[in-house]
Length: 418
Image (tube, rainbow, N blue to C red; front, side):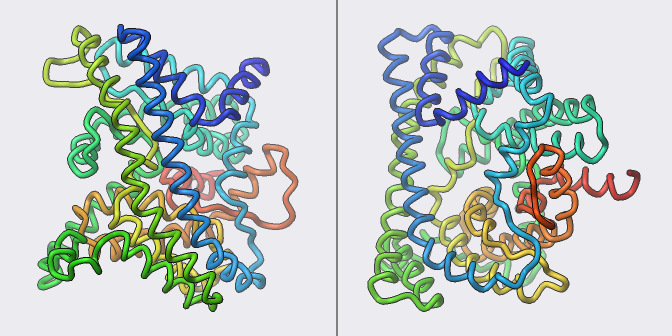
């Protein structure tokens, strides 16, 4: 089993920009594409994903001076935000991780062949969203089998939600033949967004306000263009964090460039995904219902190209810092959270149909829940990290315990019965 885990780690270490073209090439051959077409398809998906990652890095690097400024404000907080990468790495250290991955892939294939699902989840790099709750259950209840069952069971839950969200995902983001399979966001941020919009629909006057960027652009012209909004919000963040003139200008131009590049990179990626999606539909006709189609389960990062989502993310950065000083009994300073907000806002923007005001209101309350959860469940995070053999000093936490519903449920059950 250690050998299998080492192989999986090698695959993960080369990164999605390298492995995604390989996976897509193999899928293309499975779906009877010509070798040349399969190679081009894999390359286009890989190039698009690589460009998407670079554009996201540009966005995060552009706002990094503001994040560093805010980090200095949090020196008096006692719980350390270790970040999602450290928690994700710890989840791979549990003894059932290699077996879980094999079962996840095998069950996905079996469910497709038997017609129980139409989703092929190729987002193996986000298997941490399955492994972290499993590792948490293993740590809190000291059970190998419980951890394994939780991990594999959540992979099936992920497929179910991926199918349900697909129509709305494709309609809003225009990504035909794809769906989002990142467990934490599709099981919490998406339903939360739906609920939030239903509540807003009951509030007079507020329900009628349309602040979509498209509507604003019609009224305000170039000022509401995503490039200009990126420039202005980047500069605003620089002003709020007392940056020098050249730094805040660099932040503004960097954010602006990222907001323009993100949708371009997604369109490149979609060239490849559309080809393999068509091949999959042709090949799998005998396994799925006539009205169904094979869906490629992808990273929620594809939705980061949405302007309403990104504008909300940028506005939530200073808001999150302010909340850290307002929420009672906060020992957790959300520096790591500032780099993860960008991943839960797309699905909230989707449920709000791009309405910026609705997206901001709903994302504000969701972000509040994330911060409270990360603060409240710090003992459970610390226990999981220690069970993975990681030496931690004092309490640590991560925003996974705020935006991942399985983590919240497992932590609550542990407190009630363990």
